[in-house]
Image (cartoon, rainbow, N blue to C red):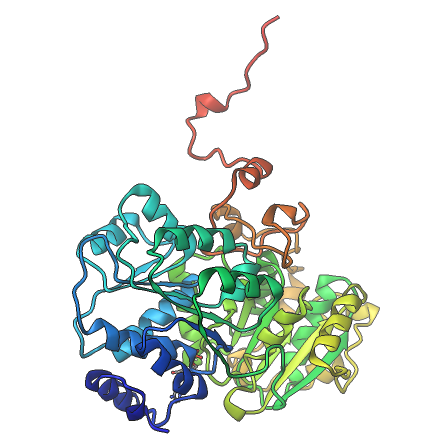
Length: 490
Ligand code: AMP
């Protein structure tokens, strides 16, 4: 099957040819004709399957006819994170280069004013995260009554992040007669339920079995104690010992841990970037860009920040924390071993993770063996700066992952410099505006998350009053006199 048989316009075919793609991927082959026939589509596909082009290419063909009106976008794409939204925009820029379409991004971290003036000019494709989109509609600067086509991408991720109520609100603002394209990597029961509400007689396309791990990924686990410094030491040894490590994503469960681990690895001489929801947009894009280009071969990330990102050819995935949800494990390790390449996924497992590991092994239908080699952290090595002999022997080698920099271990030990404590929030995190916490479990509301669980960090969340009420108040915007304690009258 070639692209020319799918019904795409000549302009779009020329753009595809320019990118060098010769054949459509299975999701493209199956979805594109339905989209062009203006049918609803339910696509069950993970990232890496070519699903973005499966909706971008036919949308470009459809949009060749007609014009946008001020404040009334013709099509709307909802993405769970800023990065994914930006990635979809890149696809429009790439495939739509020959067309004069207005494509706008509505994401947090960018000024309302700029976004507003873009909306004023008329938008053919609006790519948005749910929170920022609703902020614009509430301000009256955006009307969704002209939307002919709605894309809900990464729906299961939206569910995890507590966005489904927002999506339901948005769906009420767009015309009932719209065409809807709905993509999800997995089909938990809640997603099945909402597809029935959002879609009309959809063409169902499933390109890979949900919750399967690629056979090309070698998975293993390393036992560790509960202490974060012990896990950090094990990770450093794993990084030094890893064979054929070209680049790696290191996943943490919490944004705070991302920041601490990032700082720690930097301190130990590794060339590493970070990606979590509290970083501002430009820092996130810069870290991602450096990782993609290979300038930073290691990236410490939270699930929220990393889900669905198109990062080709990652050789290793490390689970610094075992994810609480087995689906997340599948997504994380799906970052490696893509397109038939081999990959390695190593999880650092503490005694507290036994339940999560059992759930993961049940989901993937296989036992995850222990990594070869002894990574036990002995008491004398519990100091962060003490390295085991095995790793020390390799220390002088200049490998890519360490950015060719010798760890500053000796100097740090001499000066008594220590790792930042996990409970010491880096300034960047402290300064960050509080955002809504993503949900920690399917079917549980965001406010149901235990109060001791720090936020993983999110791009766009809208917060309910209850969440706001239960958070420590941010008084930075109030004049000082309002913050003075009120003396009770006798
Ligand atoms: P996605 O699943 O949309 O994240 O796409 C994954 C990767 O596949 C991206 O790097 C795309 O540029 C690439 N891709 C999309 N369509 C094709 C195609 N027909 N042939 C080869 N690569 C593709």
